[in-house]
Figure 1 (cartoon, helix red, strand yellow):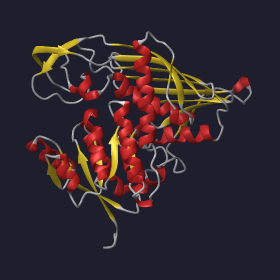
Figure 2: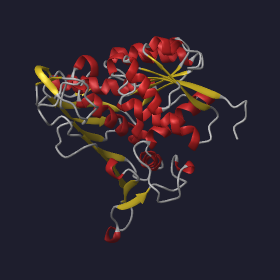
Figure 3: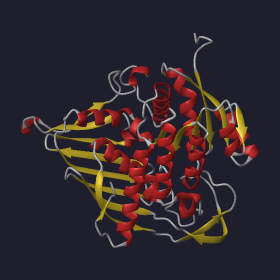
Length: 396
């Protein structure tokens, strides 16, 4: 039984839609699964619509509701601010929270521009000197199979890395009459499939490889350049909603394809599209080294495919690793071997890692610096695409 002296960590979340619901799941569950040095308390959630945010607070388990994020930051019962808003407000909210002495978890991509991300990193650096921590929410790192893959690469199981290939495909805007939601407008989202999906796969490729991209060559395309303006609420990516008679321009990419080079000389290919009919949330990554290969498919979330190229060719090949053993990352707290986890557990693990970083005063990963580096890759992709695929270095 928890002692009266047990430490708590008051969490305030800004935003309550798709990502807000996922983060709420993480905060609501993490203290019931993992033994933590501080117990997260869901103090308050914030949104602009008073009735909607109150309903979200009741549904997801938040004690209070706010309609002004500045009021949420000012609350004495909030020590950590979780930013789940569209990208255009990430910098303003995160910097204000850090300057107010709060820890910050910010959804990906970190910002809508390199300049904003640099300002966030500087605010995080100053806050770090005061003992605060700041982390960007690339939740797929927290899939046990992905964390296990990183462990295997670090152990040298695939040898010297040669190739990385990644695709992240969705289809929720294939219909040309799908409304012009905020994710299709540059002023809110920063970019389209590139920032929404591409940021995930750039982070995953660099995380698993253990090194950074130094240059890219890219092309992007917007297939549907005008869409109906929303007529009422539209529920998230792929959700229901209708458009009105008025129409507006789509100002982001629908798809982005690019190649990249790592500092070691390894090469990579990336494809991010929201126009892949039949692909709902298909993320696949494969790494090839001189000693073997590793592959992960989000639709088989609890599995890795591994080929050991040092074995005799006559009986070698890819084999399945079921990542459900207590020795695997994060799984010491969950179910017996063979009992699968799902998408929502990545947010539980993210909350765990954030609480540990706060309690121990350690630098969390991925840091705001990591988020800035991904932002620089995305900017290089856009620059290359604007110049007809010209190879573009990523600033160090």
